[in-house]
Length: 228
Image (cartoon, rainbow, N blue to C red; front, side, top):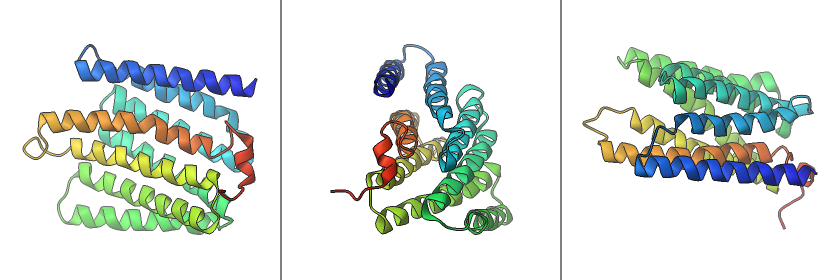
């Protein structure tokens, strides 16, 4: 039965992605509600993890990611969305810390302190909030990627590989979002359209990979067997 639910989930996501990408490529209609629905479906599926040891931090990360999408996708409030993305990455940091048996407090400080320093530095150099806030987010997700890659190197298995690849794909989409918010004289309309497509091609799969690392689709992943 669990496999049936997973197959239905993947089928729905694939259909919804195909529809919104078609809408975007051919400029048929506003696909933002459908994009939000995809994020909501992934989060809803992830809520099954809310009471499961370290996996509950992935569920919390998905909830804050969905909240960020309210501002980024539906309301076009970039800064508020990025702030909520920072919170989501801190929950993912706790998840990574639990997997690697490190001290949560110390690992959070490794994200928070450099993020504050980086943001203050940008602020002192005269940059606005569109640079200052994303800089803090970039530090948090950058450290998370490094942590996930370290985990895969030290304890190679499909679970850790999915997590590392998921974060890397996620940041590729984030880079596209950041580039789209550069001035029009730097990023042309055509380039912005391509970046927008890349963002929404990469975003759902990255979230699903992070979700899959919990073993929600395949419980055998939780046994962290080495990759054969």
